Length: 365
Image (cartoon, rainbow, N blue to C red; front, side):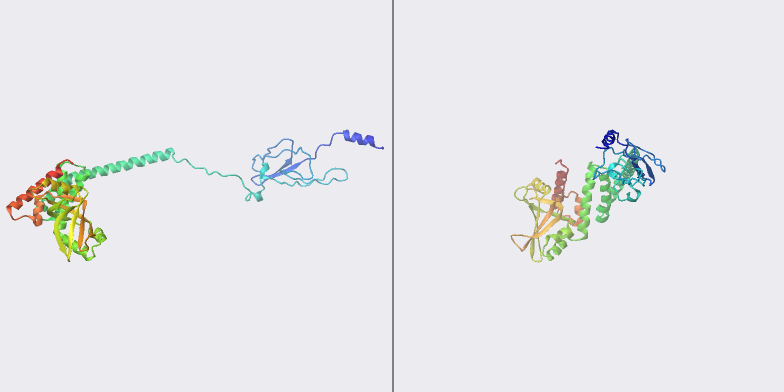
C-alpha cells in the first residue's frame, strides 16, 4: 500500500506537452525549409527563392504500434538519464499525396500532375485581318486578269472569224480550223449566245472535221481496227477523237431507243461493216426530210465501238458516238471537201438538205 498516494497524484496530473515535432521540407528550387510544426498549418517562405512552402500541422492523434501514413516519420530518440530526448536530425519522408514538395533527387521520377498545352485560338484578329487582305488581293488580281482576257477576246473575235472563213473558202482547213478555234474560245469566254457566236461554233466544228478528213481516210482506221481482230478497246483508245463525215441515207430503228442504221456499205478484208447511231439529231433530220430525199442526212460523228456482230461473226458493227454527232450546215465547206455534185439537180438537193438541217439546228428545242 506504500506509495499509493503518490501514484494517484501522478495520475491526476496533466500529461506533459508533446515533444517538439521538427520538419525539414525541400522546396522546388532545391533549398531546405526547416522548423517546428504547430497545431495549425504553416506556409513559411523559402530562404532561397522566397516561395511559400506548405507544412502540415502537428499530429494530434496518439501514436500507435503501426503508425498511419504521415508526411514525415521522425524516429523518436531514446531518453537519457535526465528524461530529455536527445536531439537528432529530422528525417523527412515527404509524400506527394500529403501536399509537400518532392525531394530534388526524386523530382524527375515523381508525377507532377497533368500538363495542359496552351493553344492559341484558331481565329485571332490578326489571322482574320490577314486572311481578308489575302482574299481581297486574290480577287482583285483575278478580276484584273479576267478583264484583260475579256478585252483581248473582244479584239480577237472579228479578225479570227475573217481569217478562218477566208482559209476555208480557199480550201485550207488546217489554217481555218486554227483560226476558228481562236474565235470559238473567245466567244466562249465572252459567254456569247447570239447568232454570230452560234455560227462560229458551228463553223469551227466543220473546219476541224474537214481538216481531219482532208489529211487522212477514215477507212484506214477501220482497216487498222479490223486487222486487230475488231477489238473495241483498240478503237476506243486510239481513234476515239476521229471524225467521220457521212452523206447518206439513214434507216430509222424501231422506237427512239433503237439505233438507226447508216446506209454506208463497206467491206474490208472480207468483213462487212454495219454502222449504227443513236441520236435525236439524226432521227429528227430523217423525219423532217420525209419522202423528199428518202432520209438523206449529212452529218459528222465520232466512233464509239467497233465490235463483231454477236449474231454473225463475219460482220462488224461500228457504233457511232451519238453525243458527238452534229448536222452539217455549210455548203461552202462541204463543197471544199470535194463533195460537190456534178449534176445540177443533185446539187440543188444538197443545198436544200443543208438548208433544212440549218433550220433544224436553229429552231428552239
